[in-house]
Length: 453
Image (tube, rainbow, N blue to C red; front, side, top):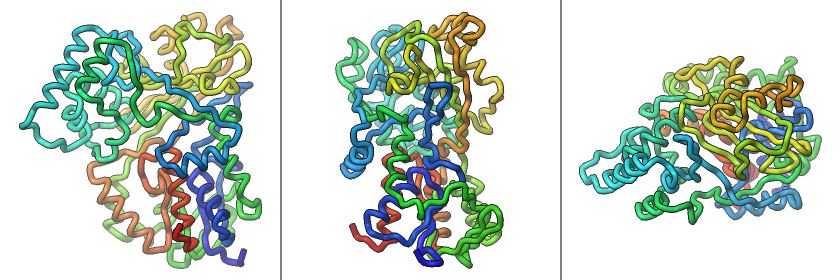
């Protein structure tokens, strides 16, 4: 490596690790990867708590991209288990299989009728105006019944935002849109087919989701990775990073996986002198997700059906989704124990008191019948709770505001003009899955190494 690396990568999450990994594959060694934490992984990390393991939030591996699939298999060779998804929706006291719109068998008759009639109206309403926002897209796509009973309340909870202030161009491939005949059959009989790109997924047998970034990091020479190295300022004109402690690091080109607002804040006045950049930045929004991790004595729950995760649209619980880490892999809990992870979204539009969320989560688990009141007490007091921890992701999901595409174009053009390649989930301010993040890093490496592959 020369005195000034051609490329500096900021952030050793999946995107930054993937960029470094692919530089190595391409035989390009003139780069340096810096990470502020003492471990790699970013959001793809796993907490170890008294023998229990919890990912920072629910993570599964699936992809429609052949290269990404082959890479995941190669990196996690011998440590990857394929599973058939077992996910459910819980409303009106009933578990129905995901996706809700295709599997309403077992719900009250009036809910089923409302769902089907609303969908028929939506399909055959020739005069319906084109949707202007996410809320209208839901109603136009699924009809008033499915919208009212599941789609609107659930999405308000997961995004913690006003859906009328969100766009919808990002959603088409993420939410299954079954045919009317499938919806009718799904109301009359138990499920006969699975929908969606994650109907089968992979998960590491050992190490939780952190096994993936660790596998990437093993392919990167130690001399090209600096941990505990925080960037405190970026001089776009001089192409120089300032690090904590005052050290400076020059570069020729920069791959940043930092959240876009953070990147431009570090760039300081030079970025914020541009009114169009300032205006676009002001409109960028995100939510915060708190994950409450519960480790329990005993291997079973009151309603011990085999489930990976459950969506909850109703306000009776503070959490909108729960998952069962021990069902992804037995290594996620000690022998004779089980675990639950609850997700709770907050934002300026849905403020919640973090200090009360563990207690509220346990109350919610009692309310929906997974635990009884005695079980929800600490094990030392005769209950089952061995671990009760909260972890916060901030940012968690980016908010697709109505001017999202135009604002991103403005910000991307600005940073690109200064030889900065902003990549990954928060660098591109997109709703990326893990395979998207890995591919984003690969594409950056190919572009900056001069590879055409």
